[in-house]
Image (cartoon, rainbow, N blue to C red; front, side, top):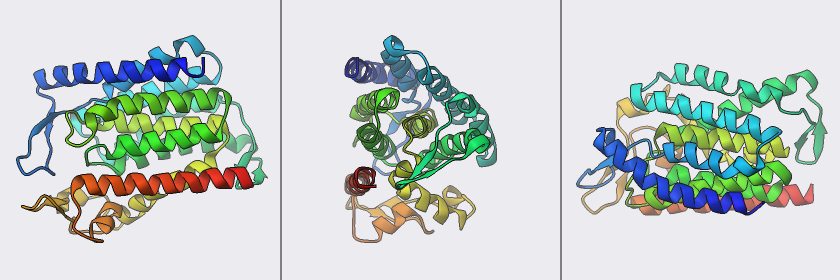
Length: 300
């Protein structure tokens, strides 16, 4: 059972993503890949494949916490669909995310392991769960915009959460990683589909859910450090980075950093990087953070 759902999820996502992409292109739901010299049109909302693949793959294992996790995951997918279609204000997106995370209040409470120190939250646990899931979803949604970036980093995070957990949490994380990899095949450079907020919000929520069910919330925070740093830097421009202009592509194919401070912009300023080089650096950093979190989990 442990491997059936991830394998099924991977192949379902791999097969469904190009089908979803073709439907989005026919419907005119496309975006410009602005980090390519020819700025090609790419279908949006590829994350819809995740909303189908994950529940179907987990059908044989449904029950208990997985039911709550799938409901929450799908609700975040709905928020993402709305955002992709009408471009929600950031405040509205956060409010809807909090509503989508409400089913998590029914998850069993447990002491929170903060690097070896057990902290009992009592009645505050459900509040923490809602905030943690909504926060994770929005952090993953914000650190985005380059081929394979958000889907690849989410797959890495889920892989390490699977390593650090067991039972339902491991199954959820492994299956989530697998469906993300199926989407990544089509979203990697050069992207043939974008995940959209449909994909990034649902993957981010899945990270939060797997961490809470597995009791590794603090270790998931380590994995989300790049996302948190990006969030903090963007508060300085009140999340108006797009209005100020994002990263640009030079004639030689390398990226010019945006005119404001961001996590990805800081990496771009370390040297002349292509889009693929930038994404690989973020993936590598995520792997290092994963090894750190895993080591802390083993030692503490």
